[in-house]
Image 1 (tube, rainbow, N blue to C red):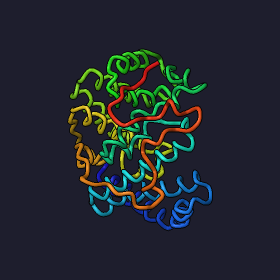
Image 2 (tube, helix red, strand yellow):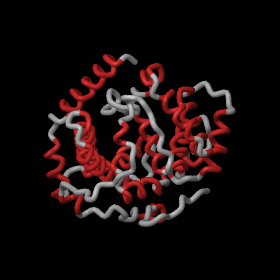
Image 3 (cartoon, rainbow, N blue to C red):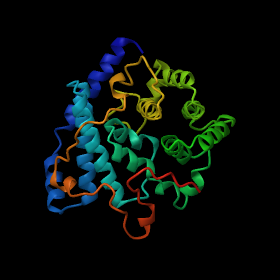
Image 4 (cartoon, one colour):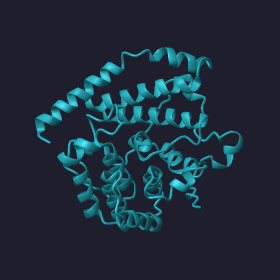
Amino acid sequence: MAIEDVEVSRSRGIAKLFDNLKSDYQGAIDYLNSGSGSRRGCLNIVTSYAETKCLLAWFADGDLQAHKQWAYVAAKLGRMIYQTTPAEWYPAYSHLYALLSDHPDIVNWYRQHTVSYFVAGEADDRDNPKMAAFHGYQTLLALNGKWDLLAQRSEQILGMNVTKDKRFLIDHRFYLALAKGDQAEMESVLRTLTSPTIARVRNFEHAFAFTENLIATHATVFAKIAWRHGFEVELDTPWVPREWLPILPLERYDDPWDFMKTFDLYLPFEEGWADWSPVPGDRALVLP
């Protein structure tokens, strides 16, 4: 993709973010602070606001600290949504803001949150290379350093004749390289994933409304996971900001609203979901 195309795309993305800020977020915040209205609906609205602020902090202001702070807010709001629906769909890109925040407990909570892959339907899809859940579960295995299983699953799908969603096969090349500790291959895959030909398609998935003109979402998630495991992958691409990659938590993260301040990150899930609740500390991923 030519430089001017990148600049046009970025300008379009920034304009979209500023336009999104025109929405009435304060009403949703007021409802959440007072415990009224639809909690889930209001959380969705405020999460959208936090994601917008996170991206603008970097792409409009060049402020890495504010970017990480708002990434933390977005990720914690996302975690609060999972409190209302623990088994909600949990794809690879769900980890984006947690990883961008570098907040240790936020990342720890997200890496332990596995329930959506063990409920009826998804439990089978999780291990079926033809299903989307297979791809999402790979990310959890990568975050948790389950290298043998990650390599086995990656080799399985790469050895198949895949026609549907073939564009995602490159992701499993990355997972295999990560599982083998092959940093050169990781970088090669990420360069391909952010190349003009691939980026034109992969940057614009249906769920990437805010990020599509600004970053390669999956490549960014993968690069952050690599850095978390000590593989300091280097990329020369506008689609994965180099400044985002080092794992450097802020000295302090703030909850900007009262309804967030009173929410315990490790609050157990309710009713039948309690046993699936992430906990403080380095608990290993529970495998079937």
